[in-house]
Amino acid sequence: MKKQIFKKLMAASLATAMTIGLAACGSEPANTPASSEETPATSEETPATSEETPASEEEEVSQYTTLTDENGNVYDLGGMEIIIRDWWTGEPTEPSNDYEEAREEYREWIQSTYNFTIKQTAISDWGSTPEDFVNYATTGGDENYVFILRDDPAITGAMANGLMYDLATLDCLDFSEAKFQKNLLHKLYSKGDSIYAMYAGVSEPRGGMYFNKRILTEAGIDPESIYDLQASGDWTWDKWTELMDQVQQDTDNDGVIDIYGTTQNNGNLTNSAVWSNNGEYVGQENGQYVYKLENAETVEALEFAVKIFDNYTLPYPEGANWDYYKEAFLNGQAAFMPEDGYAGTPGNFLQDMVDDFGWVAFPKGPKATDYTNCWSNNPAAIPACYDADKAWKIAFAWNLYTNEAPGWEDYEGWKPNYYAGFRDTRAVDETAQMLTEKGMITYHGLIPNLNLGPDLTWGIAPGSVVSEKIDAIRDTWKSYIDAANAN
Image (tube, helix red, strand yellow):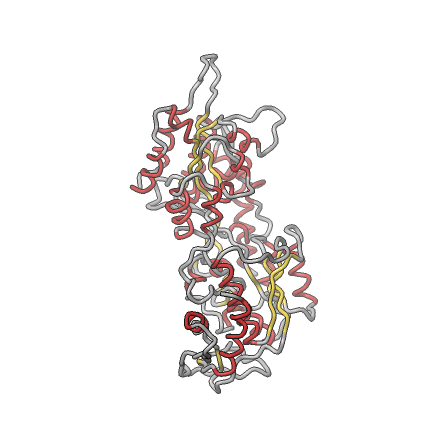
């Protein structure tokens, strides 16, 4: 649809539209029509028509619905400029497909209809983001910010110290909606009945298992059989080690292994093993953080990781960087590599791989009944230094901004980027799709002073004794968790 036609239709529809009522935020912003506990009557807006307007254009415009208070007044945000601040978004680009064009037109419409502007842009950097939020929420400012944060103990302190607005008090945010239930991040940032951060949409598929199709084929293994094992539910730790026994070999008979079963960032493998066995380091029960390092599922997974390091992992040459595993997999020195889904997308290191590769979930452990991955999304938060009026308007705008354009609710806008990078469609349609739907959240990143890598996983290595590693950190971790619960 041409933008000029769209804008003419918008003007016509706004001039004649019938609107529907919808409850506003429970904090009842000043200068905004108050909400009511009663459910207002609804009707769908009908745009004006003209002889010059094609019928198909009228039908598309009619998908938009205007929200009003119980008095029939369209919500008016007073021309406020809202900024969603992160550390990566650059200048906007022109839409490249119908989905992006529909999204842009919908966002133009909500800004025009409710009298506000909104944009997402990089302001902080990755390292300073938590501190930037704390400083701003402490001192305040005239801006209208939604902060995009990252998993960091400073955010736990911000929640405990009243620096994050309680989003559960804003009834323009319905956390039972699909866009919130697809990722569950709001549960990670909840304490009791309060919710302090949120995320809209599907979670990025994370921890999975890449495999080199050439190496498998030369070892007499059909690469497609890995996908088939996943589909049948038989892709397990035992099956993975069985296949690595088959592919790991000394190709030139010099007594040195030339092709290893796997190469990886050891911390990634250790964590994926824990998640895949229904384990956790720190959980949450009844609003309290819970120590879970010594749960049977977690201990079994840590011991499995050591087994992999001892028997199947390619050793790093002396002086190699921490990410040597990437080069090793690219060069065909190992058949498997545990790694996140983004590694196979355009612009990431697997695009340089000559051999074909596939991608499945991390195999499931004996304590698990299904595949999973640990979802990690960047939470959106509103500073508590804003009053109820300001917080409501910002939440109202953000909620609309993160909705899909009408008619595109079921479109999977994340998929084209994966299709563009992966070498087969099963990696996207079966693995990535599943990992956006089957996932977990974990709480160790919210515990102040708990540093998972230096404290534990960096020390899970060849020859490690898991019980000794746990003994060394048990009391310290428990004290950190107790302190977090006391706040």
